[in-house]
Length: 116
Image 1 (tube, rainbow, N blue to C red):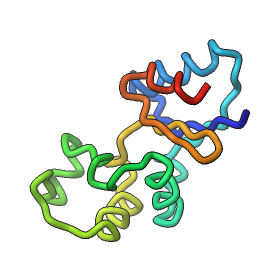
Image 2: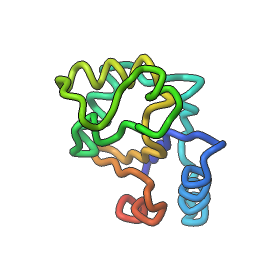
Image 3: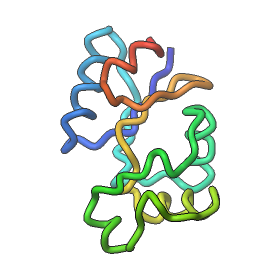
Image 4: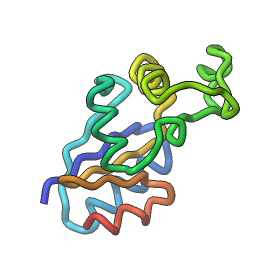
């Protein structure tokens, strides 16, 4: 079983999720997405696997969101949200854990258990 985690080691939920995966005997591929941001095309695939709209994985509480002047009330198309996330990976909710054609958001970390 191949598991990939889009991880931010500074995030407690991301660390907890990674620990939970490893405690189950799985060694995931770790993508440090702030260092290696996913492209818009990769984000489209992740969102398809998550079965989510891009706006639902935006971290509106980040300073960068305020700098950009974006909020949950903004009306943008999916492509615009995806490009915003690709250009500003700090805004991507984390962690995202992927297994084959499915993905979950590790909030709470236990949600990853549905993939294992």
